[in-house]
View 1 (cartoon, rainbow, N blue to C red):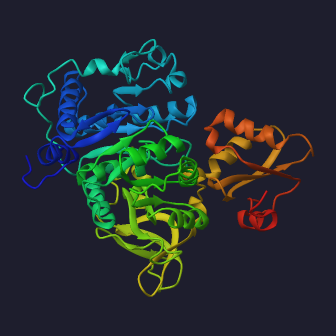
View 2: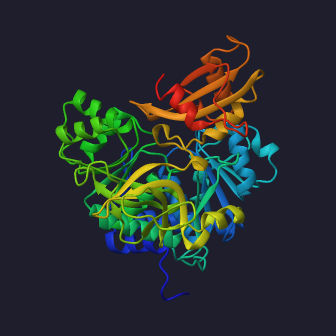
View 3: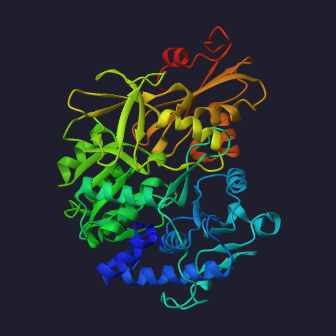
Length: 511
């Protein structure tokens, strides 16, 4: 065993020793202490080992938030198994593509996602084990709760922890489907520990700062902040999915100090708080992305501060962070454990004030894309992680986000990642469509919405609703266009390709 090692499981073991009977996870009316959390992780890990799932093999999870979801992350960490969560908003076809890449030894679902994978245990023979969270399960699935009774919970029983290095993979977090199958960012134990310490240092987290775990656990924000709060000795108040009124009540009941936000989470929370007559007095931090109007409303109606920054799944979360009030419009200064460098198309550093691609180096940078060494090598060229985003520095060292690079253009409705190329590929399958340009437009509720400018030679052949429904029938519903415009000719460049910038200028950012 490496004397210098510290892994995610080491964090869990430390928590049990240091924080003992303090709550680590709160779900419904039950609080699981740090000590009990470790015991449950140990018992579950011993069963996974007994089932023959070995170090480096994958377990896929397609489920909404649950205490067992966090415990499965912990059990994987103990045995060196790689957790591979999947976005539960994806279609069955999209989920199957992820499984093809992940090649897991186990698939875990819940009641909410069971219909997506119905019949798969009999049909998908490449996955040998199928489980469902809870005490009961659908046809072909085994109840996940049955695993807990298979061996003693205490670490004195069952299999010993595997030899796990901080450099070993802990989880694969899916990014957008830039090349049909979502790329998987491989995060190591060292990545997660570094991200934990970054969040603790920047936000000043303490054991009293409970976290509302309402964003989905397949997302780097939810997973990263849950791990950071656990490392800090505070509890995660877990809900399967966000509901504004329930969230407001939980914030007050459990004195929640921190909420992560993507539109429309914060607006909904503030509306619910006003309806319930509470000013959310325990709330100290709201972190994420939102409109200036919603952020101002937070500051005026509560004592909390809004934090914003820049980060990706590939950087284990944020690499710059600040209170919005510190420097309005900025994304903060580089976090303590990373370097940020802005470069031109030839990887030459650009002067202060000049936009350049944001490149990052340090222990927060992921290990690479799962099973895609060529993509990883290109992303890591010249010793820096190339984010595909453009930013600029001001003379005081604050980073400002400018735009995405054209080849990595991304739309983020409600915090999800949508690549225009994926939506365009689907729309081009519609008969009579000869061209399409998809891009993001401002949206008051979701932050960004998807707009499609569709080239058709026969006017009136399709309605906007038909295009939206067709996309939703092929890929996840959150990727469907909210605005569709039909044209007889798209702006094109000299090589015949769609001129994206010209299309945006001509057809604009509105409806």
